[in-house]
Amino acid sequence: MEAVMQILEKQLKKYDEIKDLSFINEIHRAKDPEKAYSSSTRKFYWKDGDAYFAFSRYKDMPLSKVVKIDPKFMRWLINSDFPEDLKHIVARALNGGI
Image (cartoon, rainbow, N blue to C red; front, side, top):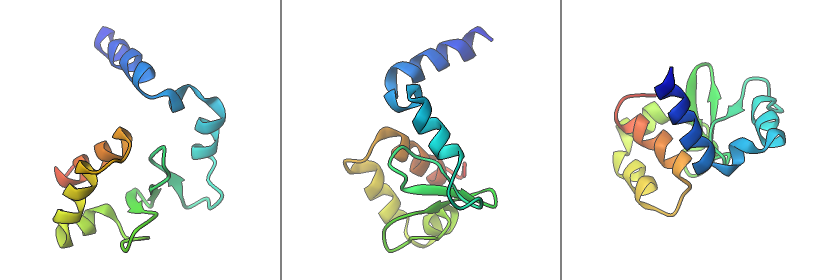
């Protein structure tokens, strides 16, 4: 339990947006009940248990599919100037975690 608290404390320090209750409420109360955004930039959303792109030529495609058809694009996202939470989601997808 102590390890969980240490991780939570570090996350709270690193990601200011998770301290913003209006932001938290907004991402958990999506306008489309089928969608709930999964990054601070709203570049991904969850639908039917899968993460989907909300931008790019892969808009409305699941990350799990894009990983298979264009892993180079996914690596580009990680190496580009995007927020860390977005990069974390992409890295998890590349590693088979999403």
